Length: 448
View (cartoon, rainbow, N blue to C red):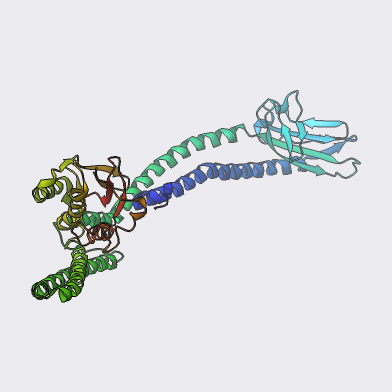
């Protein structure tokens, strides 16, 4: 019984490649979309701190002590320091004295310390990128703390604009690359699609081998498959020829031997009759096995099961006319199985003959479709059936549960082994009609 496949295992090679490319590309695009703005923000923040560092040097260089107090002797060059709420501020603190830029107006820099970092807010409560430095002046007892900061709002606005443009570019890149990958995967898998088409032609019998013009990665597989098909056909033809030759070679001597045995006296005739029958049974069995070699073109075989049932039943209606058996064929006329017609006749013929021998009045033939492209051909009769303990025994070679009915005991065994050679199966059980229910599982023929 086949294990249930996961979603990934059910994907085709093309879909697997596209899925892998989709995951990889999505990861890269997301990394770029979220990572690049962070890199740009870090770069702009460092650039802003470099500018603030120049202002810091200018402030520190111009701090003087007059009458025991500090003063900034020179106005800074950037006019934003004098424009209220401009977003660029400075503050000088020592003891109880505080100097601040005109841009702060009547506000002070708000300093908030957290376990992770210190946050400084400006005149409008906006967060600042800042630099802080402690300066010690000559002849001045207290340290001087200088803080200079710039609002992050222009920087954040720039980052937001960058994000919008960046995601548009990345979306276009994502779609373009994905289309190119799809085209590349389709072009790369084109040889496999060609192989699929040629296998379809093999199944339909329009082609006997695969074309050898494939890429070097696929060429060994194609060569081995062609060699396997050729080898199979050669072996099959040889086996069938040997079976036919053996049949003709043994038929005449065996007939002569049977005639000679019938002319012997009773004691000798009785001794030799059974060995001759055993020889006949062995010949029938092995010739039957040889017929199970399959079709010359195993990939393209198909047979209309309903049509073959009708043809075989017409013959049995004449052979068993005295039993007045009615066969009900419920099979769809379009139903076809992947079995050589000759082999199908052998299997169905044995099962129907068994029904004609044992049915009281009716044989019913119908089908049930299974998953995995399989179909069950079910043949039931209203005969006495067989005991539950004997279902496994009757498919063994030479086993006959009723010696009074003519037969070699090879029919069900041949059907079972022939079905197995087509990757099918034969199951026996008691049917709803009271008699034997034979279920022959075979593969549905391809519609291509």
